[in-house]
Image 1 (cartoon, rainbow, N blue to C red):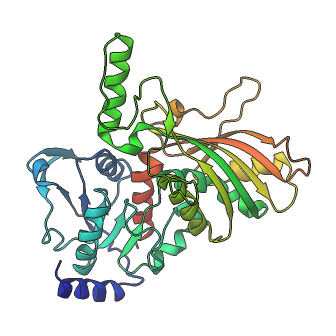
Image 2 (image 1 turned 120 degrees about the vertical axis):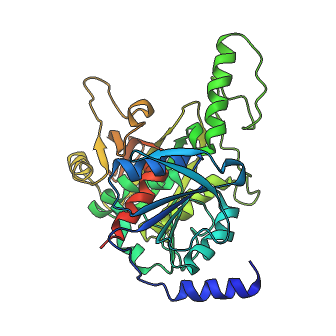
Image 3 (image 1 turned 135 degrees about the vertical axis):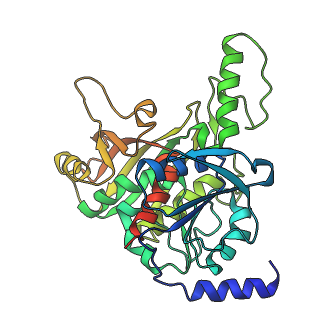
Length: 357
């Protein structure tokens, strides 16, 4: 965009505060052929989102591919600056660079943008929304709403009811992150490298930095020498504070990639302001939207990525007091959620649903 176009886009966004969607909006999916884009289209169909028209946008190399949506064959179009004429809602999942360029253009054309990338998440003027936690924040948008990092979403859904039970003072967590978080190519690398490993063949990894089959490794974003945190860990800490409305919340997290296709898991220790009873913790989680308790001690059945995959709830279990804290203020739990659904596409569609009249 030229400087004049940037100015026009900014002016349009400034005037867009509190804009809502029509009853049957025209919708565009940007990045329609990617892993999250495919799930966005499926979510729109499965949830019966009341759209009047769906446009599928992607890179020129994907243009012409077809997708079946509600028994209609739709052709994928090449994304361009004129793609958003008449679009009311633009769901972006094509990477930060694409979002930074095209999201302001879409907003200037009159669309409300829900963006899955990290481009706008920490912008003070852009709401960062998990509907079960802070759906009211979406009403203050200026044309763009950010969809949080997948780990931040999956952690925030159970943290919010616990924070309401007793203010959370500190969270210490370790993640077990699936291939889907690195895109469709990483999922294919996991499949192919696992097959090669089992057959005794050499496999040269090209998508991720380390061999993936039967292995796990630290999330391979750059490590900040000053803090020791990598980029993924920094995102999760910053975004959780913004989502929960607690800018001083103490959070420590270690993010690890594991050989799972599409569901992220998190081990969390949550320290509260005051001692909490486990029955009260379970009751708060059981009543929370988007949470499903999987906490069967007798059968040793707790959240698993296999059971989290393909559905929209965040599974929560292994609920127990932290034995290292005799005060009774710290609780340990294990959660799992589908990275492509609640961690990305489903959360974006839920945001859009909150904007309908």
